[in-house]
Structures are given as structure tokens and as C-alpha cells.
Image (cartoon, rainbow, N blue to C red; front, side, top):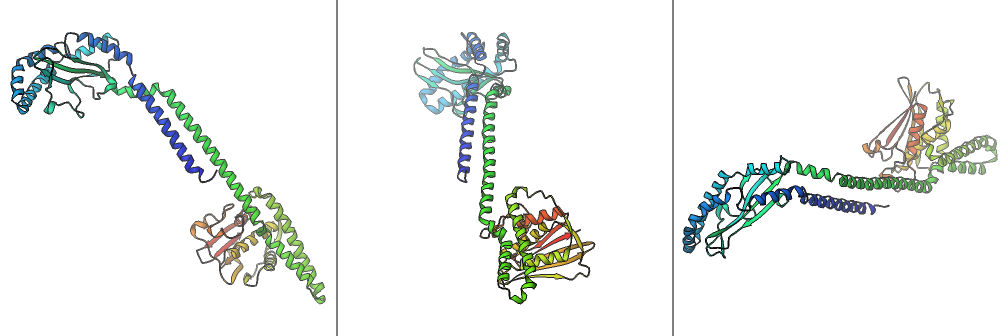
Amino acid sequence: MNKKHIPISIISFSVLFIVQYLLIYNTFVLRNNQYQVQERKSLDSAYRNLMLNDKLFLGGQKIIDSIIKPRYAGFREAYGDGSPKFDKLTQSFCDTLFTALRDKSNMDSIFRELVISRTLDTTMNFALIITDLQITFDGRHYIPVLNGKWKVDEQIPHILIDGSLDVIDKQNQITGLTVSSPQGNSYKIAFELHADDLDSRFYKILKQMMPTLLLSFLAIAMVIGIYFLTYRNWLRQKKMTEMTSDFLNSITHEFHTPITTIIVANRSIENLDQALWKEKIPELTAIIARQSSRLQKLIKQALNITELNEYNLEQESLPLLPLLAESVSDYRLSLEQHIDLELINDLPDADIEIKVNKFLFTTAIYNIFDNAIKYNKSIRKSIRVQLIRQADRTGIQIGDNGIGLDEKQLKSIFQKFYRGEESSNRPGLGLGLFYVKKVAEAHGWQLDVDSAKDSGTLFTIWID
């Protein structure tokens, strides 16, 4: 997996979600269309039987006929005179007709009787509507009479006569009837009955769809879970690959100091004058022995890099100042001429003994030295080591004139394998300061760092 796979995965997830959404939506629409099919058929049958010789509701035809029949002559005359007069007359007619139908409607009681007789849900609401009304003078050609405020269009597709159903659509239509008479001076009327328990329909359909929803959510959750596990394993593998690559590419850096020290000490032995032979040989061979031992331990640590979090300390009591001087002296042998490494001691009672693991202590000091040199752009690099005293604590301060650290880096420098932006073209594993931190914690010491960008860095190891 690489970065290209991330957008591909996002697109795949998006397609999956869209497909699942469409499946769920279409299932909902299908169930919505089929909702209470049997109940609607039963109600439709009862209503149609009731309206065989009537319109809208019982007595509705009588009301319509009583209002429309006396007006046919006026309709014919107005229609012949032109549209404005005819429109005005038909609007007045609609006002009278619809007001009368609404006032005299008995549909509410009729609907409740139908619901009870068919053992349907008594919480159902209904709406009785007129969708079209036309008149004819010859029994063949029909003229619309709905106009003005009564005009049926897309925004107002019906005229409500009775009922309290808020949402009127095809899904809750029970009956749609169109009644006409093929004779002169008659009319054609289209009306519909709608009914629904709209307040609970949505939740009832969701309840019916619950198995489908659960399976869909489970499928999505499983895909996300599999992707998450795959992505997490990929991150782990990527991290391990990077760690291994960095380790193999930079292992020379970790072994540089002891190897260089051994080489320098060996060359010094080869080039010694006979007069200095007996005086210098023991010192140089001791250096070679110490650095060989250190190199051996470094190799062991490199092979057991995953166990860096646990130290089984083997401590011994050693004088602090000679131990620190020895570390500085050994490290100084590997330095180039343009690097200054100075040990300063202003304490009158610096000859104190500490319980310490000598190898770990030396490793920590060397790692700080390495960083001070590696992250330093000065022409003359400088490292200053000093013993200080604060209250009842002794501190080892190591300062440099390097590039320094910003606030963000100060929070991360002790993390395992952390390497800042400046590390991209520099060797290293990101383990140097991690070692330092762990060594301090293992000994029960406190490690402080003070730094600012382009102002060098000051490490302080407080020994209790």
C-alpha cells in the first residue's frame, strides 16, 4: 500500500456508501409504495361501492347538481361572449360550489365508519380532494371551469373538500374517480380519496427494513474494520521497513566513535617514539580495550533494538569527575581539529561518587556529543561540558553552538526514532536522545533541555 491507495480507498468507500444508500433508498420507496396495500384496497373497495350513485360523499352529487344546473344557460352565454366574462362567472361558481361542499360534507363520519367496518387503524387521517371539474354543452367537448384561485396546476394539484391529511401523494391515494355524462349540459368531475397514518408510517417502514439496515451497516462496518486493520498493519510494516532501512543505512554512524577511537589509538601506537613507548602504551591500549568493549555492546544493543525500553542495570560506584573526564578524553580523540570539546569544573567538591552503569552513561554522553556536532553549522563547532550544583543536586551541563531546537521539536526529540526536518540529509536512527532519556530514567535522574532556534542547545542531567 502506498499514498496512491488512499484516494483509491476513499473513492471505493464513497462508491460503496452510494450503492448502499441507493439500495436502502429504493427499498424504502418500494416498501412505501406497497405500504398497507391490502388495507388501501379494502378501503378503496368500500368507498367505491358507497359512491356508485354519488360523488365525493353521500349527498355530494345532489349538492353539485343543485348549484351547477341552474347556471348552464349563463355559462353558455358567457362562453360565447369571451374568456374574461366566462372566467369571472366560473370563479364565482367555484366559490359557491366548494364552500357548499365543505360546509355540508359528511365524509369524516363516513370515513370513520369505513375504517371501523374494515378493522383498520383508527388513527388514519384522510383527505377528500377534487382534481378536475369541467362542463360540456354538447356532451363531447369539455370546458375547464377551474381558474383563478381555483386553478389546478403543479403547485396546487388539488382542491381540498374535507379531511386533515397534511401530505397528499400517490403513495397514500386510496381511490381516484372521474365521473362524466355523455349528454349536453353536463359536467365531468375528478376526485380522489387519500388516507394514511403518516405520523408513524416512516418509523413502521424503517422497522420493517431493520434486517436490511442492520445487514448494510454490518457490511459497511466490516469493510471499514478490514480496511482499518489493513491500514494499521501497513503502517506498522512501513514503520518497520523504514526503521530497518534507516538502521542499515546509518549503522556506521552509531559505530563511528569507538571505531575511530580504536583506529586513532592504534596509529598512535604505530607512530610512537621509542622514548614514549612505555609511558603511552598502557594509556592507548586501555583506550582500545574500552572502545572495543563499547563496540561489542553497541552491536548487542543494535541487534536487540526492540528491547530498548527495559534496562537491567548493573550499577557500580564510580567517581563522577574522572568518569566524565574519561568520556570527554576518549571522544576528543575522534574529533576533527575545528571542533572544540571542553570540560569545565568549578565545583570545589566535585569528587563525588555516583551509582551508575558505566556503559550506559558513556553512551548517553556520546549521543549528546554526536548531536551537538551533527546539528551544527558553525565554522568552529564548540561543546562545553560543565559540572554544576543546585541545592543538593549535581548536574552535568552539555551545551553547544549548534542550530538549536524550536518549541515543536523540544516536545518530540526524546521520542523513539524521531528525526526532525534537519535530519533528512544527516545519518542517524533517531535513537540518540531516546537513549539519553532512557538512561536518565533508568538511573532515576532528571533530564532537562533548553534551546531556541539558531541559539544552540543546553542539556542538563541532574544526578540526585
